[in-house]
Image (tube, rainbow, N blue to C red; front, side, top):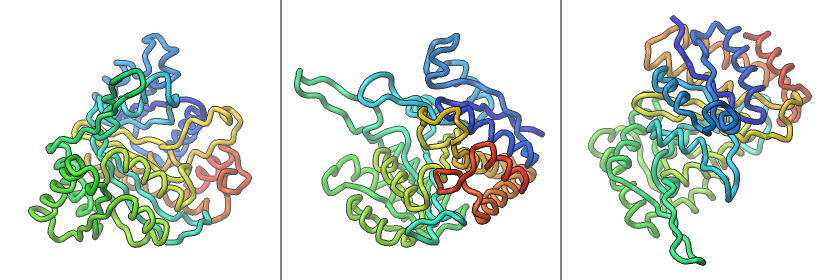
Length: 340
């Protein structure tokens, strides 16, 4: 049985990398049926005239699954992030970013294999900002005990399911004693009461960044509140080759949205230069999610085929230009399909 998946191509290079992923999925006999909906600038120019149309949200809720390309977010002015709207509207409280060293991708580090889990709905990204005076504005950092407890439980459960050994919480509770303090309280409680078998540690975020770049292999699962998780996950992507080779997922109780976490790169759109790997890896995460939550062996096998295909392709030195190779989007996709 094919599982319906909402495909959101996004902006810039999004449609190109989405086409590539769909082609690889077909070749791998993945049990998914894509239904295209828009979000971002493409949606703003559509019939509903909204960045995140109601029809797109309804389709994701109905299917329970979406695969999303990059959407443009203006800096400092303009509209609010589509990604933030999706996460808050659909209650996608857990952002998951696996980061691992890839064969054939040379970096300063070897044997990196960690996961960043980020609380996805609160913190400074709640978007509560106010003008105090003409020269003073304030942004509110929001933390609630239920959300802190929810992400802690999800993280320790994930660690158990994936046979991970340690959870490290990055925080700044020495300064933000109430918000980050609550985050720590709930992580400690969940660890002590429900998951004492998982190793647990806490680390002040600025010192943690130094430790990360000294030796990332000392970490396993990193749990962060919203803003910290956003920054840390991009830093960790740099340890293994960049945002073009790291997948992402946003998971809630009712649905999950898997996405490329890099930008829309409008300057190279339509030039056969984009690397589809990040979105493909996110699609592989989606297939594994389907296999686990819907007990589908075919999805698991398709995920294994795709992962082996891109590992083998990278090992053979068949790389896109952002990784130091010569292949364009289409040529890299064809190399993957040949190995699938």
